[in-house]
Amino acid sequence: MFRYPIRFKIFIVSLIPTLALLLTGVLNHQFLNSLGHSSERILSENYRSIKASQRIQQLLEDTRNQLLLDTFGYEDKQNIPLSFKQEITEQLDLCRNNITEPGEKEILITVTEQYRRYLPLYEKITSSKDGFGGVGDNLISFVSLSADMIGKLNELVAINEQAMERAQQNTNRFARSALRYSVTLIITAILFTIGISFFLSRRLSQPLAGLANTLGKVREGSGKYPVIPVRTKDEIGFLTAEFNRLFERLKVYDQLNMEKLLAEREKVHQAELAKARFIADLSHQLKTPMTSLSMSLGLLAEKSDRLSLEKQSKLFATANEDCVRLAGLINELVDIAKLENMVRPPQKEMLDIEWVIRETLRPLISQAEDKGINTEISIARDIPSLAIDSMRFPWVLTNLVGNAIRYTDQGGRVSFLVEKKDNRCCFKCSDTGSGIDPRYISKIFDRYTQFSEREKSGTIGLGLAIVREIIEQHGGEISVESEIGKGTTFRFWIPIDQMKDQQL
Image 1 (spheres, rainbow, N blue to C red):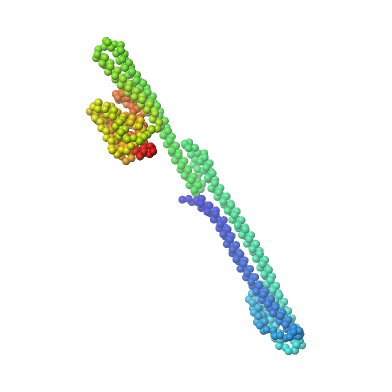
Image 2 (cartoon, rainbow, N blue to C red; image 1 turned 120 degrees about the vertical axis):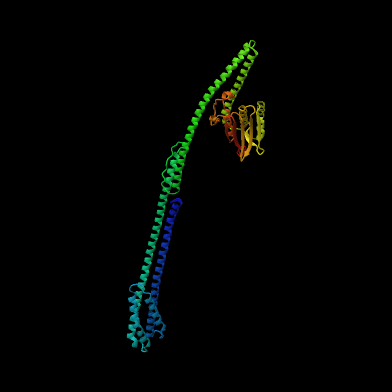
């Protein structure tokens, strides 16, 4: 997903010094092994040559001393074992096989040549029976030759000792050089680790600090969101890109909120205008029946004895109609107060919906029977108890059924049905009344909506706006279908499970 993830960078930073230290260890091991093998080889060969030379010297000196003692009669003449010849030969062979230094070969050639002359002299001296007089010259030559051979062997020993000393010095120098090389490599690895760690920490901290500073300056709802440049291809770059996408979504969100706010402001403005027109119209509507009622009662009070019974009956009828209209207008004022109080959350309690419906609609059913309208109430048996506002929800029922009865003529029918669908409780209020003009269907639930029939009904039309408010506060929705001359049907629902959860 990421080209250079942070964990990869950290791994590389940790891996490089580790590899450097591992390489240092391997090289040191090789250097020390090479040094050890070289020193061991040189010292071993030099030591063997020295030991063989010293052994030959000892044999030559012992032989010479013994011959001198035997010749001059200081001791009884003893036979020197013949094995010394073989041992000298073996030691010479050993020296020749361990030639490692310049000059050794020439010395060994000289010693070998001398040893060839040494043996005959030894044989002559040991085989003579005449004492010093018979072996004098040979003895002198033998002693002189032995001294020369011992001197050459001393040179051979000195050469090998000097070689061993040089090997020791070279070993020390090589060890010091390897130590310096190792220390240099370790210090280089440490410095490199520090440098790349500092570089990586800057590469990690700078984008994060820049991102934090940019985010600290962002103000939600300002509508101004920055576009942060993506400089890396790791998790920080991905995080930066995600913030840029978030800012784009916030811009769209703020734009939508601004549009909604403007729409709400326009809606409020239009509602205020409608409310102002409504209040002005309501004032006019109150003035008209009040004037008519005042005139009718004034005539009856002043001229009742001079008016005929028919005239009095008409005045009483007019006064009664004006009282009905005034009552309707006063009810509208009460509806306004209810509508303004809808901002308060409803107080819900678990109630049997069938009981609520039948108790609420009982007075309206009696009114419908007096008007000659048939009524039907049908409630399904599987409806559970619902959490509803016992004060507001019955008002929905009385308003819808009351309107249905008001706009239905004698002989018509009003029905109220309740059923359960999934997790909803669905209500249906139908009538066979005059219906609603299609021009007003889309605005029937708006506040302060005025229709041309308001004077006929004696109301101005806030009831359905209140109905929708109450249903929406219960988490439901309401809709209407109507046809002129055939009647109107209101359908609404409230959730069952949600209402229970809210109550709990």
